[in-house]
Image (cartoon, rainbow, N blue to C red; front, top):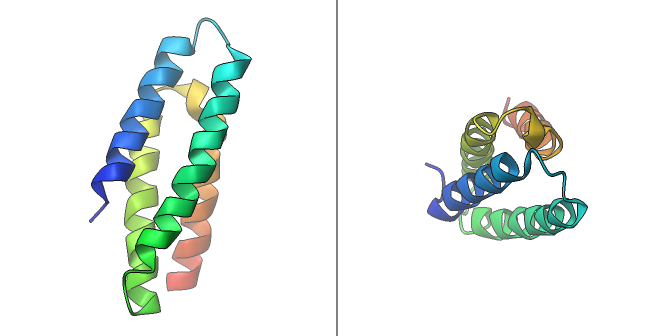
Length: 97
């Protein structure tokens, strides 16, 4: 199942994107990108807690899928971040298959 930190990250990011949709603050976008990179690193570290590579991949797939679902609720403004997680989901799904 998805990690609770990822759920909170996705909801926090979706909220900020939704609130910022009318203003287009470049500084916020930069900070969200930095936060996304930190979350990517954290998720990889959390996946390494599983001993089998298959379980690591399933863990990543579950987290990416949940994150995408939450970001879709934020609307089209979440496009760049959402696309990043969709690419990660696609590559990990291919790896799993």
